[in-house]
Image 1: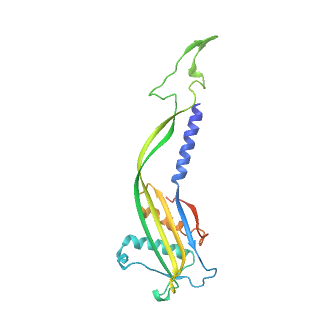
Image 2: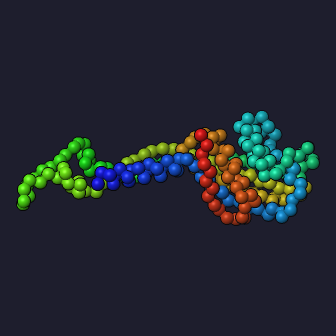
Length: 211
C-alpha cells in the first residue's frame, strides 16, 4: 500500500514538473495574408514617447528578430517600407486562493506511528505485517495563496500604402512569474507559430522553457 502511495505522489510530482517546463499561451489570429507577397520590408510604428522607453525597445528587438526569422526585412527607410508593424502589451495581477486535495499516508496520519495488535481465532495477529491493514491513502486538503499574473501581447501588420490590416494576433499567458521580460520571448514566438496560421481560431501554444 505504501508503494502505491509513493507511486501516486511521484506521478503528481512528475506532472507538476512537466507543467513548470513549458510556457503556455492562448493565441488567436485574424488574418488576410496575401498568397504571394514579394516585398516584406517593414518598419515599426509607435508613439514618439516610446522611442526612449527601454522596455519597449527591448520587446521591439524581440519582435524584429522573429519577423526576420520568417523572411521579413528592415526597410531602408520608413517611406520605402511595404509593411507597418505595431504592437502593445500589458500585464495585470490578481490574488488566487487554491484548495487542492493531497494524499496522506495513513501510516503517519495523525502525527505519529501506530501499529495496533490484537488476537483473532487461530492465534496472535500483528497487523503491522499486514500490507492491507492501513487501508488506502487518506485525502486531505491543502490551501495555497499566490498572485497570478496575466500577460497580453497584441501585434498588427498592415500595408504601409493603404493601411489595410493583414495580420492581427493576440497572445494571452498566465503564470506566477512577475517578470514580463522573462516571458515575453515566448509570447513573441507564440504569436507567429505556423505563420500566418488559420484565421479566427483560438489555440493553445506550448513552448519548452529554456534554462
